[in-house]
Image (cartoon, rainbow, N blue to C red; front, side, top):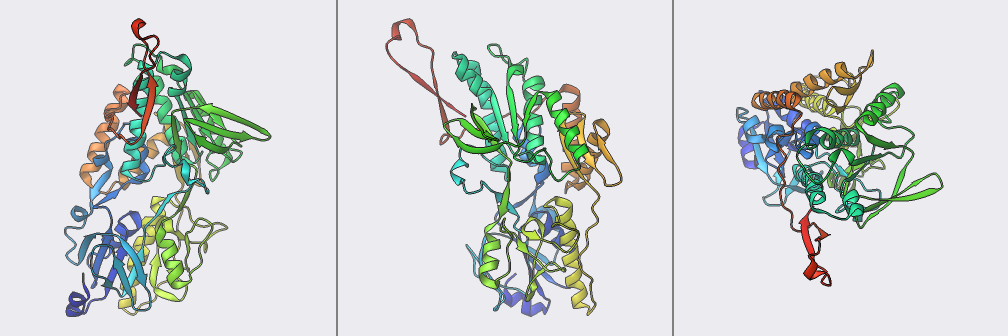
Length: 455
């Protein structure tokens, strides 16, 4: 919505940057408010990130966990969706600058652009060890996982085959745990009858975590249950393990004074996140404080210091006004923050006061595999089948559209019965290739040939 249109209606103009959980729930909550809303995102869809690992491991297709923003907000007559990227802001003139459009004036600005991967100063590892934040990341992971089995089926050299069937997941948080468990299930159940020259149940899945236990924010009981469940699936869990290098299809890691290297053609990163570039933009323009991960330190009402008309929510926000640590970067927190800021802005228009933001934590969950999960509900700590059922219904509940809920429920039910993964498509990416030596024919014994296999 441009400035002319805003002035014609005399309605305050609220600009929301980011269509994730925080931004989308803020927009949804403003449906009937006397405001004009502009939601800007560089993607035309909302992505349900908590299930992204299931796209990466072939359980779900991207469309199952994504919904077009225009469809979600089509009945919000006061809302315009723009497919664009915000590149700068002027907080004094109250303007946002877009990459492919004229600048927009705002009366209130909500920034919810989330976080990206963090390689702790080793960004050169990104091509060798992709993270998991976007659909493209998930498809690349899926391609590498399933292409590793395909390449191993054709590889005659035992050492190279072993490297192809070695999967390393770096980071023992919820994403790393879920990825490691899913890969182990693929190797030991889903594809074990699909190949003839390899035994996929001999695949190695290693999970590296730098802390003394996996799922560090969870209670020790949940961490122990999760590790046992992973080990029952065949995952080799290595805690107090620091990765020091990733290169040439190998991971070098340190445990105490010992340094080791493992050859692996599939290395997945789940070890850390850092704020999107909008955090730095806000810091440069408003001098707001950033934490070590680049997240914006917000006030108790989610605004930023000295600028009560700019709000930061979701994973980009460091809210440290409740408890002894900032609120976690999870979907329920972002949803509640979006709803709170929407309510605050409406109350401001009505001349009413709103108290500081508070979040009621209903717990956290992580799934390890079929019938295996851990849940910390505050009043109870659960593991196994009961926790897995709770995890399923919680994720179905938070999916945005009814058709997504229905499709995912049906897909999960079918996979539960068949132990299959129906979205095992391998998409090519020519820029990332793995060279595998082809077996030599007798007449070609003196000629070294190579076959290129995309991985």
